Image 1 (cartoon, one colour):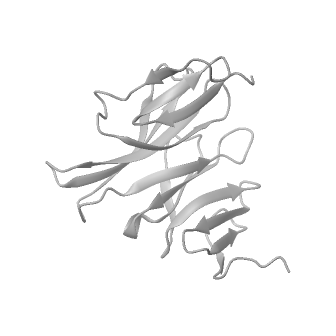
Image 2 (image 1 turned 180 degrees about the horizontal axis):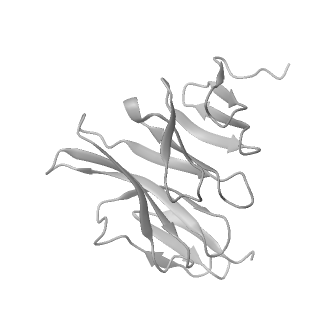
Image 3 (image 1 turned 45 degrees about the vertical axis):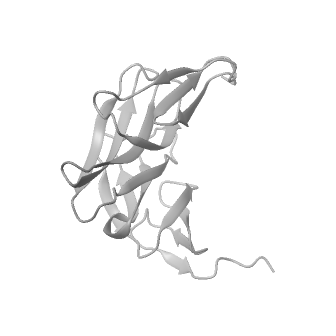
Length: 178
């Protein structure tokens, strides 16, 4: 459906059914009133995911989270939460991608110090596990299959895996096309 679209606007999710002419907004209040949404991914009109983070200064605790919907955004179920009190910054969870048509295998990127790395699901986002820690800040991923993928970093590095994220080859200066 070319008219259906989702986006992140401030701390709410926006949905359009008419190509962006009008938008409906969804918030996670009161479940997560201060959540910062970092990414949204829909595989079909009904099933989608959103990922983000928030910092609770009263508890001195940061959280990464992921929510899933199976009814076009009417209800969202929390599927992943990780908390840390290591420092005054929330670990961030973002860029999600599901390379297989069945949406069994999916990946998400975590950032900030010990949380920087690849998170993986093999059961349609019901459970997520920390697959690989990175010493550099990653910002984008693209998988061409459930095993083969590329990840870019904010330092201009390119990382490649052919075994589902267990091992990576790092190209420290990117790839030169010449």
